[in-house]
View 1 (cartoon, one colour):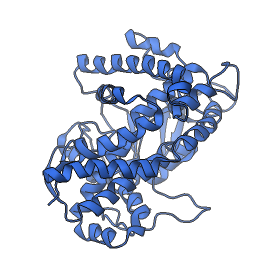
View 2 (cartoon, one colour):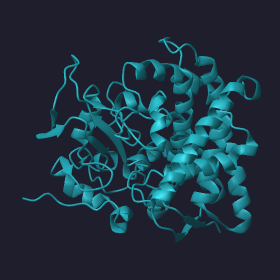
View 3 (cartoon, one colour):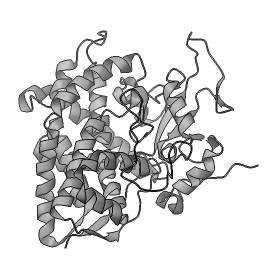
Length: 414
């Protein structure tokens, strides 16, 4: 039987990819003709297996992108940041960043709660709010920039850079717009390098200050190389608050589309952690993550291919693990297409949750510990200040299959 085909740029797929995902889960590994990757991995079992086989499926860092010529290939001279590292260097740098990040975000819940109520208070005067552009985006970015150590007068500029760079990720974008995204990334690299240099004076308790203190000799296995710190800062900006914005937007949308779930959370706020788990599972903010098939075995010998799910994958192939599909896998979740905030996803302290909304394994999203309290603050502010909110105008979904977010979500607040 022929495998189902997929046009990942079709607006019908972007609006609701989950039926297509269901078709592909029967195949395990999908050979799909899209401009992003040759193989998409759909089942929960195989997505988890790719994450576990970290020596065979690597992050697509600078030496694995295939971009060996052209103006943007100059970035291949820079060392990868945390988000594109593999063990063992990833393990070392992740340990450093866990400490820096944990210290810097200690006050995040209080900051997020205060900011959320300020933003929503202004919207209440108008009687409506665009959750994406006026609430979730502003809340997530403002909290992140303050913790990061970005000066307030640069917030709008950096936010514009981040969104332009993200637009440049789309392979279907016009070449001149993709070039604009690449150029913007260069600007962010220079800007964050400059901020890191002065962060100890301007924002001594910030993430950037911690990263500046952690830089040292490239030969050191304890400290970060300046290139590593700079690229980590850029990637944290790209993923550090956008994932939270997406999570809040789709979370509010799904809660209000299911009034019984909204009312249940309104009555019992202790369900908030479970509600956020379900938001992540039901509509993962980042739907896909790329991996590169290693061309060497553990001994360093060259190999031609590896096996996954009964299929051979040629070394050097880029694959995509589809978290959005894995989180709807009917072999793992009961009634996976139902939105249910009382669903139990956490098996216990000794068992990892099957929810892959923030990835899994060594590459699980470092920003999860910030995204959860900011999302809780956003939903909590809506429950407190606008308990009768209802959905108004809904804009289209983002035109990039890697991300899951509405471009506009109007709420009527009274």
